[in-house]
Image 1 (spheres, rainbow, N blue to C red):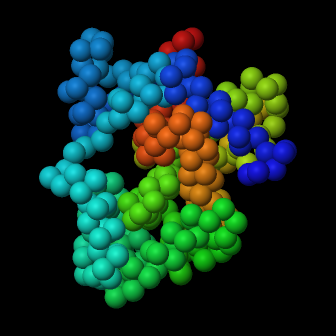
Image 2 (image 1 turned 135 degrees about the horizontal axis):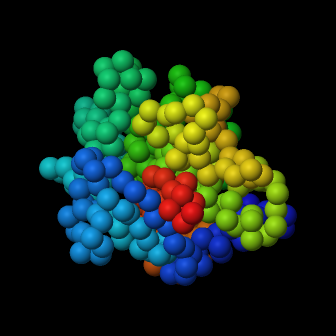
Length: 288
């Protein structure tokens, strides 16, 4: 990342400029979905059509974050998970990991790989999570242990590692965050006149859970006719690739945070991306 040829510092500057600068983004949202209840309740005064989510910059995207609230706040769960890991209270570590799953709406099925991994590692979860964090927080550590058996990385486990990180330097990396980073990367490269996505800016996106119609572009796909972005969950060695995406995005957000004088955290940036990444295609349709 310190290489003179790296585009990441310039891309971080681009994102930092969009925090308070101009970044118009909007899309239609489902009429009935509890994840949007916060938006509909708190921001309905902004426009008469609360089925449209919109922002004018990344700061506004963060401020308009919407996710279902639970009986126990996510920050309380994070604090409990960190405390249980520090004290090696393995029963509480397991319990708090399951709370993270419920908060994130992931690993719902009894046969889900993440749930099975949590149960299989009973008694050594603290050690495994601490090891995973040491790799994710190192810029040059080999991530080969994220092989789907020893260590997992997916939409459920990225939330656990984020929650457990005592330094708060890691970002959740899911399909929506990847879609938004792909969109911003595309905009950045288009401004530079590039017609190819370099590896370091090839952020992977994850498809939505909605049924797709063959031949219709997925709403999380930030690609255009020239600049193509890879699918997150179709990657070869997908746990390894997902871990790399989480580390790369976290490093990018840390760079951006420093440019914004640490007034904007990694978590702020990730939440902004999460909202933008719900749909990265409707801007084109709504403006046509």
